[in-house]
Image (cartoon, rainbow, N blue to C red; front, side):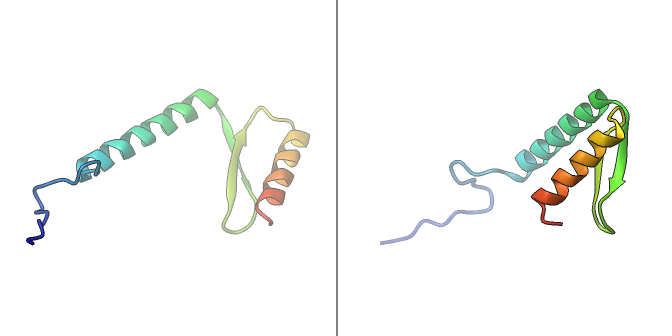
Length: 77
């Protein structure tokens, strides 16, 4: 029995080509950029040396504190 080998020019059924991956990455980047534009002004809050989070600037200090506490609880910080 002879095994059939895939050459570089052939794509497996259901496989994703390099250009498909790049296109998907561009779409995701575009979606995230649009979401950021819609949210308006944001502020960055430093959780520790390596971690910052972005929150809407319209939140009160109490709401910001609650979100930071929730983030720290969820991520065991």
